[in-house]
Image 1 (spheres, one colour):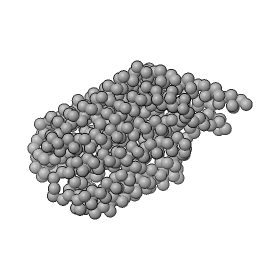
Image 2 (tube, helix red, strand yellow):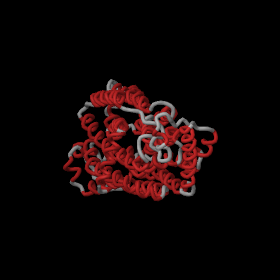
Image 3 (cartoon, rainbow, N blue to C red):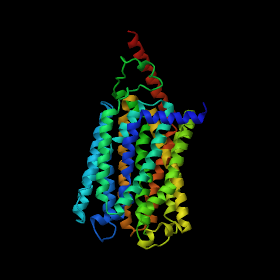
Image 4 (spheres, rainbow, N blue to C red):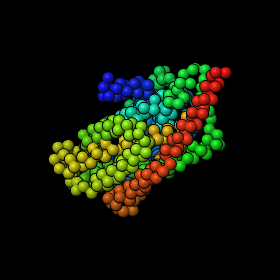
Length: 472
């Protein structure tokens, strides 16, 4: 069988084993950009006829990230003790409720409408805060080490695909004033997904696929029941690479989250006035191919280089940070055409300008490298932590990342007001903070191999202990 054929079989195998992870994550991806792509329309739903309320919309987004950060800690703690499958069902049903209720929000009442949007948004962000810890913990116990980069690569590729398709779907419905129907439809679908997971999904055995432990854990009578102790917390969770991963997340996520908020607000505001629908088409034509090609191609490369030395994963994350910073910063200095609202709705007019194609190429390459961080960080964290800490580590890391992401979005909205709508200066300042994260990852190469070896030695010792128990 050729290498290409093996890869295809691997992806099918991953989809079959982890279908519920793809289900909840892509359902979330479909809705994640609703606010950003329709920012001007949503502002008008709240404050009809007024200019864009950037600070309020930034707070709406940032507070949701804070909610996700806090709920992630709760779900991470629960995921290391209880069934990940049942927790997925609970989080998915709450997520659907948040979407469905958003369809009943009264419009045109200013802060009152804003408050109802805020409550609905906080409800579904609380639910979605559990998705990443649950998925990472479930994936750790469902995949072989050689499959994990392919899993995260495929997950990231499909996430970006559904994110962009969700942009288009929401842009069409919001443009047609069918935003209530949008929330009702997706809320109903989310509920149905939760019920499907409840009926069909199965719970994997903890640590059952780890290369060191999988042989001994084939025995149904033997279970991995180790718990974190003061000593293992000190020696593993507080290891240098973990500490760096926690801190860098605050900065790196600013680099990843801010462009979506600023870029879309930038091109949809005057004097450019590109409509949400045309914005979605631009992202589909350029962002979608870039996301697919980059995530799937880099997943294979990450596997090969990561097997040689885990430091290579760190280098790829740093490379991704530098390229994203350069490309997205350059975007805000493009000489975009001044358009009327009618011209911004006309696809032919928008794409008649050569600079639009230049902007599209930037989106293509930026989306292509965007997945490198999400492809390589989870395998690094899994390699330097024990099985009983996987969800906790993911949730702690997510907590700080979302704090950074939420703070970055709120900061961007505030700076726009401070600098009188100067997107160029705002983007340069906020995204410069993200470079700190890439530099911190480079520092982690001083300790990462030692931290990986420490985990291997602990698990080898535990494997012997469980073997001895089996013989007795």
